[in-house]
Length: 112
Image (cartoon, rainbow, N blue to C red; front, side, top):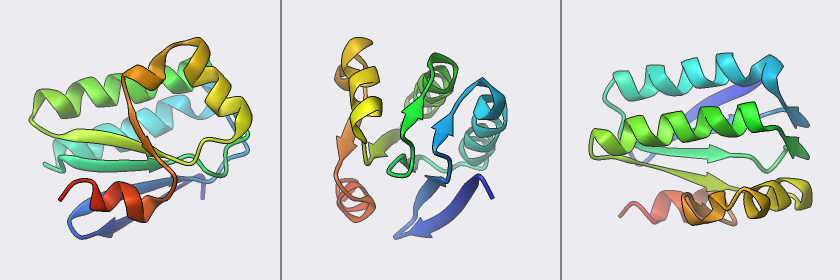
C-alpha cells in the first residue's frame, strides 16, 4: 500500500510508503488528501520519511492540499525529510510554506 492512513489524537497521519514519489503516484496521493479534507479533517500530517525523492508533481499535490485545508481553517504539516527531499524543499523554497517536523509524534503534538 503506497499511502497508509492512521489517526492520532484527531490528527490524520498519512504515511507515504514510496522510495520515489513521482507523477505516477501524485494524482492518487492528491485524491486521498482531498478526500480527508472533504470529510472535514483539518489537521493532517504527511510522513515523507521513507521517500528518498519527490518530484515537482508530487510537491504540487502537497501545495494544492495545503491551500484547500488552510482555506477551511486547518493545516497540513510534514515529517521526515531525507537529504534529496530536503534539497527539493530548499531549491523550491517550500520550506517557507510548510511546517516540518522530525517525527510524526512531534507534528501531531504541534496541533495542540
